[in-house]
Amino acid sequence: MAAVAVPASTGALLLDIEGTTTPITFVKDILFPYIREHLEDYLSTHWEEDECKQDVHLLKKQVEEDIKQNRACPVHPLDQTVHTDEEKAIREVVDTVLWQMAADRKTTALKQLQGHMWRAAYATGRIKGEIYQDVVPAIKRWRRHGLKVYIYSSGSVEAQKLLFGYSVEGDVLDLFDGHFDTNIGAKVEGKSYERIAERIGCQPEEITFLTDVTREAKAAEDAGVNVVVVVRPGNVELTEEERTHYNLITSFSQLEVMGHA
Image 1 (cartoon, rainbow, N blue to C red):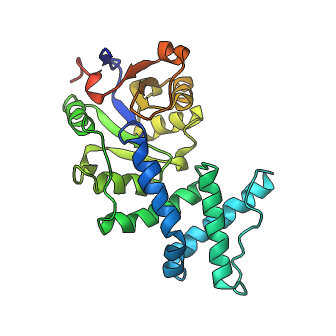
Image 2: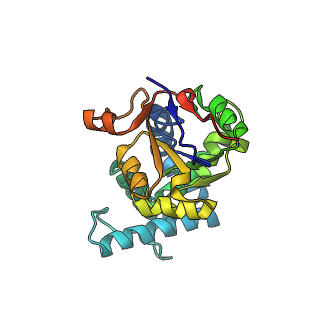
Image 3: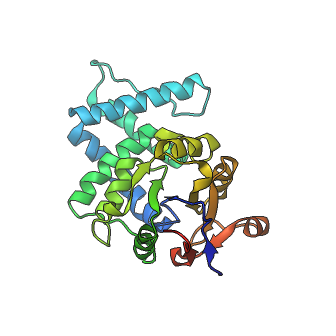
């Protein structure tokens, strides 16, 4: 696959994680199964702690919002009253979390709880963040050319920082100028990219977004952001139309930033 030149107007690169910097298999085969296997134990251990209480409160509010919007949701709303039997309450949270994960929901409530669970796993060395080998050298090169580099993922900012802070390459957090998650908006909505541009102090056309998901690519394009689609093993197969429409790379090393300071 040929090299792709970053537009000369680009001052910032915005990177997706799953399928872009990190194999999809890491998220699907390591991170998510860890949550499913350890969720009940984690809740039982931390149930009385403020952080866990806040996570449960956010999940409860999410269920209430889903009911209000007539969205599909677990059969029972979460009950947090003092009269609730703890085991039953924990079971309800487990059911809610597993249901959201099965439905591939990207809610902030879910991502926050997952982030807190992964933090403990990274800190003890049970998990190390996977990064494609071409990622770190390429980001260092882009930064030498004066580009700023940001992450935008549906995983929480905390989860992002854990992945890059406890990675197979060591702590590489200093490579990034900032992190964005669903608190800024959904990745399939153009407004999210406009907000990011405003937050980092540049115009949308001064950002180049790297992602493997064409729905995200379209949303970014609609906002005026430049887009490069990353083709990695295990990523969703692109249609012929998508392959023709988007600039494609299979490695970050193919992204040319010549002409930048």
